[in-house]
Picture 1: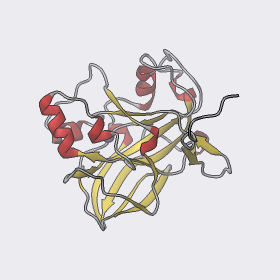
Picture 2: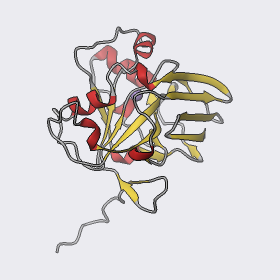
Picture 3: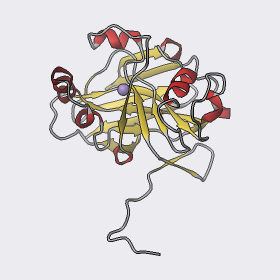
Amino acid sequence: MSDYVFSPPAIQAIPIFGSDKLFPVNRIFCVGRNYEAHAKEMGVEVDREAPFYFTKSVASISMAEGSISYAKRTENYHYEMELVLAIGTAGLDVGIDQAESLIFGCAAGLDMTRRDLQNNSKKQGRPWDTSKDVEESAVITPIRPIAEVPSFARARIYMSQNGEMKQESDLELMVWSVPEIIADLSTLYHLQPGDLIYTGTPAGVGPVERGDTLVGGVDGVAEFTVSIT
Ligand code: MN
């Protein structure tokens, strides 16, 4: 066996509620504009023709506890509260009726975004990588195994900033449902155990400041508290 020229990066792994085992992360997919009211606040009409995606690298994972860093090179760092799906079974071209069987569990998370860089990228028709694939930007709680999740079709999703509720909606208002997202994404990628899917944010996104306290969650899945440093 050959030696590596340097130590490979540590495996990023997420704790699981009620288990000593960890969920090793393979890839991170994110759905864009998946709540109509959020699409409107971003100045676009929702498009039911096809969902669209972007990705974050595994290195962007940060557990939703303690503090997360305000990102470099931005003056408009936004929170986006989201339901996160954790894939436990591989699938390609999975039908909508089979899609749920790929889910290992769910978590609550934040898709932190350099909004100023994203707006510039949109104007110039450039990729979103530097606005979305940001270190510590894929914030995630431990994973709730699917058997313990009461519903991912209907549940309150919320986030408060310094005690003031900023995002409050319901998973039933997703433009693309959880099974639809998995089915569609599986026509683009061989979904693999360890893949995470951030399913989009409801309306009410906004900037954070250093010193903020964010409390977010999805009923029946998880709640978290993080501060911004
Ligand atoms: Mn998002």
